Image (tube, rainbow, N blue to C red):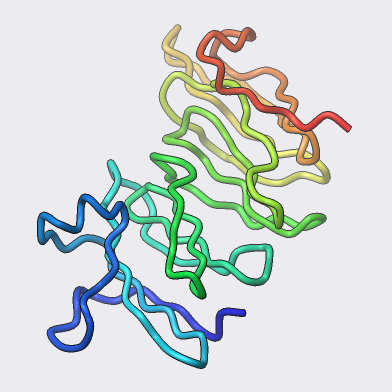
Length: 186
């Protein structure tokens, strides 16, 4: 289990080299979003390539072992013991903590939503908005909010079932022409 983790202001001027994610990006000598992981046995530094913009945070993963790093929008799942990371989602600009199961709902650049649970990505909605969300919140067993529409500068209501990821409403096509939707079928 991760004892601690935190974002750093930059690469430390001393100690071992930081582990870069992705690894090929690190060969270029860039400084990105830097995080320190301390397992109680040892500590190490990770240097993440920044995404397109968005959140810069580190959270505990709902599985109780890993960490979630959002590096200027790019969401990485980090295994601190193995010193490895996998990029899961790009362009994350909002996070809502949820329970049952514990985890997060993330906004992908105000276009779609995705839920992360203890076992990984639980669901991903179809595109819901043309250009942003407003008033996104948890209400009971749903995520609700407003989706931007290009027609008449209006907002359209949407609802997403927290357990399955099934979405209703929104301002984008009801079909999933971009094939983003991954829903949980029980």
